[in-house]
Image: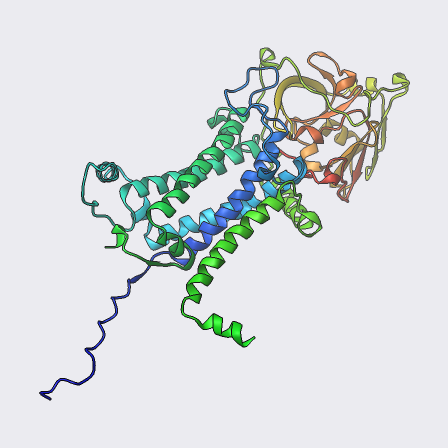
Length: 237
Length: 248
């Protein structure tokens, strides 16, 4: 045993495999991509519906301020072909949209994952620290759980926006049966106005969301598809 | 054949496949959306969309609709300066002989009726100032007066099997099928007047359906008959794909 073997030194051990972390439950992934599809159809059919009366305000009264008064959106952004076709898409896709939303929220509550997602006042300090880090005013990444406080803020906001989209939709779908809701939004035309603006906030959120996925954490895309996260993003150090 | 199998077994392949798959999915999704533009569903999807529309009608009629909830009424000062008027004919539909006009009430009723405008004006009168909602998205406030459909029902006494009313006009075959509950709503009237004046020809003279519980396209103008039935009647726009219930 004293002589070393005549063969070449053993090869260096392979680098430790990047650990795979189970990140997203199938309900989260299903509802995420389901919402992408349903919401895309809702927005496209909504833009076709909008074309039938492309402004806000009672007839004969002043219009609400909007850069889109009289705008006809390009054909590639509309779905349904004509008003009735678009209405039928819109009123069919509203069901999966609401069901995905309820399923997702039930999962968050049932699993306790809401704790890692809901932005609460005590997250404010962490959000400021996180903002400092992004602005280069702080060297080390602040410690965090699954999501940092800014992400919590974004995901809490988008859930609220989804609720607002549904409620303003109900307010203009059944303005008599839900007259209290329509009144809450300031009346039929105002509710229609907010329902329309929710779309642009959703689109802006999606643009930023997708940009951040690719610029900051491309591995999170795989995690949202397969459920497994592989990488060394600070959140999983 | 063998060559391609071997290619598939190279270790690089799975990663590329997954990426390729992602790219393909993203591309296909975009292409689907692009192809879908201006698409009413085609022969494959449109029937399903219409099935869901039937489901929505059912929810609207049996779950959401309240036979007693009243639409908000407004002050006369709130009236809109204008209210667009739609009809199907190329020109405003006019009666050749307005004095000969009669409203026929028939179908599954114990007492069919044949009413003149005078007859209708002698019946109970309901008037209100409410908001009109068009399916296109516009709204306008106006006053209407006329006889409640419930008063007609009281007089013609429908059979228990009657569940719907078909409202028929003399405007190029325009008609609307209604559920009886919406027709019996206290604010559903056969209007012979608008904004304190007799109903103008553009708005359906001499008689039209009015109700703040339904979208404008359900409010049949230029009325000639009400037919009570146990089979759901369609309607001019409803048969072309617009929601049948059209309730607010």
